[in-house]
Length: 206
Image (cartoon, rainbow, N blue to C red; front, top):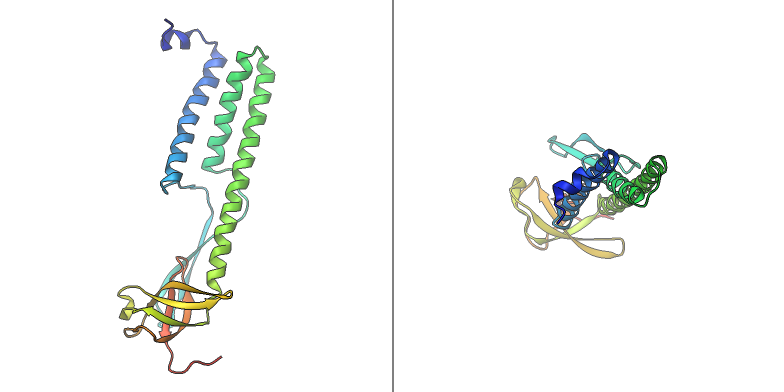
C-alpha cells in the first residue's frame, strides 16, 4: 500500500508545489467558510473610514462607515485564487499537460475565482450600506417610545418610528431624563449600529 510519504516523494517538484498550494489554501478556504457560517468571518481588507461627530451636548462620538468601493484584493479573494490555482495546476499536470499550459490554466482559473469572490463581496457590502442609508432616513423624524429609555445613556430602550411607508422598532438612547412608554420623541442622530439618539418633545410639529 502506497503511503502518503511515498506518494509525496514520487511527485515531481512542480507537482509538489501545486499540491501544497491546493491543500493549504483549501484548508484556509474551509476555515473561512465555517467562520462565515457561525458569524465570525472577517475580511480584513474592507476599507473603513471614520470621523468624529458631536451630539447636542457636545459629546464626541466616532462615526464609522464602510467604503463600498470595489476591492479586488482581499483575504477571501486571495484564498480563492490560490485554491483554484493549486487544484487546476494539479489536474492539468496529472492529465499530462505541459508545464507552461498548466501554469496558464491555473493562473487563469485563479484570477476568475478571485474576481468572482471580489464581486460577491462588493455586492454584499453595497447591500449592507444601502440598509444603513435607509435607517439614516429616520433622522429628523418623530417617534414614539415603545420600551422605556433609561436616562443619560444608561441603557437602551426602543421606539417605533414610521418611514419608508412602514413602522419600525429601533433601539434608542437619550441624553436626557427617563423616557417612558408612549412619549413622543425627536430623532437627533442615527449611529452606525442603528441606534437612535432621541429627546422628548413637548409639541410635535410637522
